[in-house]
Every structure is written in structure tokens, then in C-alpha cells.
Amino acid sequence: MRYLVHWKMRPSPDREVLSLLDKDLQYCKNLMKEGKLLASYVLDGRPEGYEVFEVESNEEMHKIIMNAPFGPFLEFEVWPIVDFEFSLKTLREVLEKRKK
Image 1 (cartoon, rainbow, N blue to C red):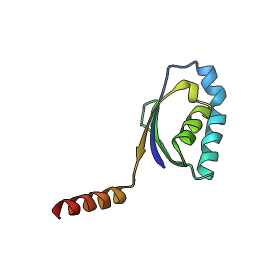
Image 2 (cartoon, helix red, strand yellow):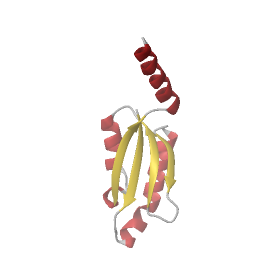
Image 3 (cartoon, rainbow, N blue to C red):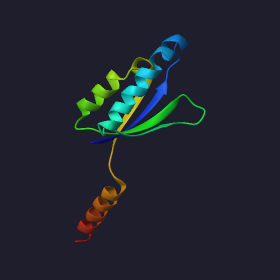
Image 4 (cartoon, helix red, strand yellow):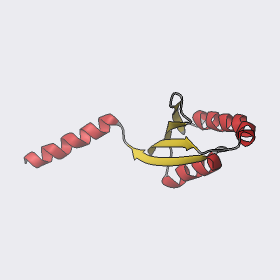
């Protein structure tokens, strides 16, 4: 299952955030090596960003978010997503069925 995750930093004490920077970076690198984190982006000039995950289940996605070192300092929104080509293929199939 593929997910788009929007994260936004909550107001947080600088000292605590600084103490977790290296841990969070390593956490993300490990997820990338495992093939679970496919992409990670930060919005220019804003304390928020988007990530794309490929995981086995909703529960696994939940665990990844809850275990993130920065987790307590972030707000998350999570959406399941499908590949663009798959979406178009499905649309074509639905429309062709309606013609019959």
C-alpha cells in the first residue's frame, strides 16, 4: 500500500528538536534503505513537508509514524494513494463497462 504523508512541525523547544535531528535523519535513511520511504520533501521556507511510503498495511504505516523520533513534535495527515497509470486504467475499464 502506498501513502502520501503530510507532516507539519508543531511549535517545539529548540533544544529538544536539536537533540533529535540526527536520530530522525537516521530513521528516515533506514526506512529508505528498507524501501518503505520512497520520497521525502520539505516545503520551501515552511516547517512542513510530504513523504511517500510503500508499506504492507495501515498498521505498519501507523507504527512508522508513531516511532518517528520527531513524531511528538509533528502533526500528520495520511492518505492512501494509487499510481497514476493504474488510476487511468481503472477509469478506462469503468467507462468501457458503461458503454455496454
